[in-house]
Length: 491
Image (cartoon, rainbow, N blue to C red; front, side, top):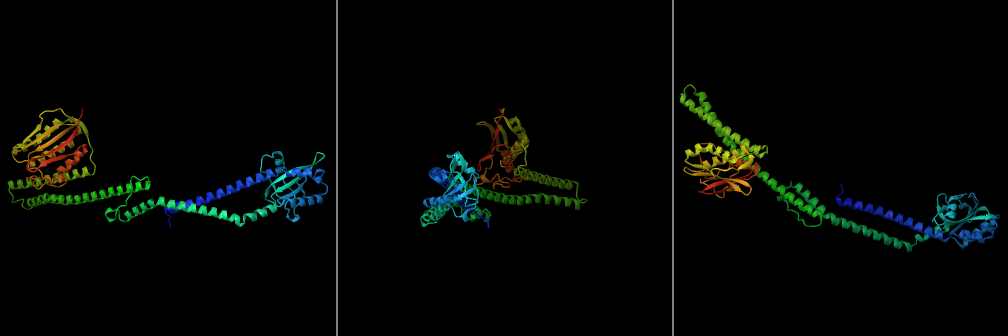
């Protein structure tokens, strides 16, 4: 079973706390032991020397070891915490105060004794305990000389076996157990308090994790569950993270809804385009079948008329397919720009020239205002020409005979603004928000004999966006429409 973050933090805290407790206990015990040893050894440092100087058996030289052992026994009765040993110059034990069966060593290392005698200020110094093969204890030592010649050493263990036994009993007494239990209770209380603090600080993170998991189970649908309340201005990073998560989920939800709307629009567009494709295909197929079945009975005039109708349907079909591919490329971001500097007036007059005949046929006045200007723009000339063509074609179809279409050019701040204004049928305010949607056609659209796919304004909107501008529209029903965009001016 995987542990939660709080459980891992709590377990880590307990382990670190126990480790620190053990290190602190070991360090305290070592410091206490070293301090006690140094104090006791410094207190009894010259005791062995005084015994050597004040005792006749040691001053005159040691010959009667039995008498020396009796002396050691008497001294132990006066000082039970001391053990006395007499060593020869090589460290061999010659006399002692302990019972013979308790002596584990026959010889004592003299190097600690020499160190103590040579450097008495470097305490504590531990020497070998004759009662143990591994234990080392503090001691007091003094050389025994006769006529200047070294006879041996008086070696006194400070804190002997009797001292250790009494100390162990005192440590196990009830008087020391109470402070130990109090200290342990204090440490446990501190540990529990730290665990509660860890739980308090990690609770928001746990709540955020549960919220994210709940969203995941609901397939990240905000409508299926309420959003958690977080404090974005809190000093707690988890609250700020939770607020960021909420805003991220709201953004994702908005994107999901947008994608769903786009998908629905695509489905509707495909349905409409399928119908538009079916009509010229059916006409084309019908007239070709008529030509194939009645080839011998048709007159030359009829045959020519059927062929012209087939060509017209083929051109309409190609025009529709071209616009579908163009819109698909624009929406897929598969269009590259070839921007350059050019004279805007030259392009406008070229585009107007393409529609001059059509405007004359409908007696529509088509003009550029002002007549002359020297504006240089930086744009993709082919895509800008495509936009102008779509907008002029749209204006001519919705402007009645005797109307007017004006292309107005002027400066707006540091950019060049182009307005294509007509006095045609106009568009109602309710429909203005939808005119750039693919396949949308206003209810008052003017019908003619040409095929209109309803993609022109959608393509123009995307092409203008590629030119770092925005296609805007103003219209009033019955009074006309004005499409506007801005271009970057070259100095």
